[in-house]
Image (cartoon, rainbow, N blue to C red; front, side, top):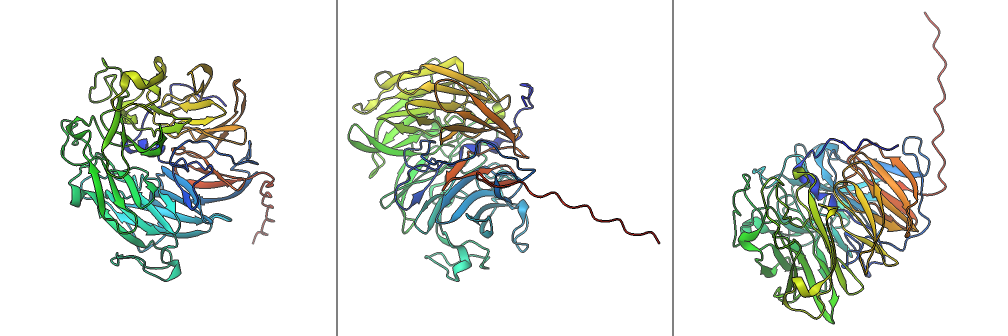
Length: 498
């Protein structure tokens, strides 16, 4: 059923972290991550996925599991497990109470809860917003999960938790070590070591390439939005994946951070040169040398006459979406903290392959902006040269990836925080009203259905082995074809009166 477009707005600053969910595609051997590959394209070669289901009746629902009360991270599927980020309102370990940031692991086959990693909150709510949990989608490689905790720690944890009875790595100070608790291998404290000041939350889905983990620091402005608290602190770092030791740091954009640094890096080869693509908190996109962090090129993702005004009143935006590398080009949209509401945005296709330095004019391929594109938190999905991208206002656009030609627009009539996920000839899109829209891929729009999931969806669907995984605000669902509805409960005979 279509909804009224005057849907109430934006309930929390930290809901912007919905962009930190994942989609599965042909991953590098032994890895899974946001976008599932370092190129971050939210498209997949998975097949056999359902186009229709009913979570209340149980039709095509393989299993479901409760999480916390605010969930923005995942699902990431790897090694027979599903990983999500949430808060501690689910209280899986009764001994761990109070507000925490939590990563949960479930068994992929049947949804059995395996373990959780619970992080205490920082004392400053300006840096660690209450009840918002972990807002960084893990990258999994082998038996390690890498993510940024709510405490602005880049951490590596064991995929088995303490279920294997071992305390892995140099970190041995875990307070909770039961079989349902997480096992930290190492932790790099970005506040303590680098003096970063995350605005509202520490976020960012790392990329793991070779021996390095690349991650943003979330360095941002103070609670009054007046200044960058720590202008000399880095916004982007690389650490050794085995030891957690800092390898290099990059301080761009320094004091020019507009609000916060809330995006994720991508990695790929452009013009024969391997590079890490880093979206800065100043609204610029940076290409960096992976080994050193030195700048190769930078691109201004806002029109030159755009102006930043705190509270969302201006038309200059920072970057919350993740860049996608596809066919030698980089695709990225700009946006703001969703509490700032709708506003003019821009989506860019750029080709910086043979350029260096400031490349804004020479690298532009096409742009969609003005009245044609609003602020976005979403990451693009590109399949068969058709690009699917949603904006915060709830519009999903199908565009030609090479030229930007517009094919069609779908209106969700609700805010969209996550990204569209493309697989099996379908486009899946979740919204703040708790509905998943299912559309056919292609140049002509065809809506297959809109399915209510029970609570708001602030993440992106993912798929693995013919199963579609959807994380709502309160539950994780595994959906598959051919599962019959639950049998209705038989009425019990009334007891005889006395």
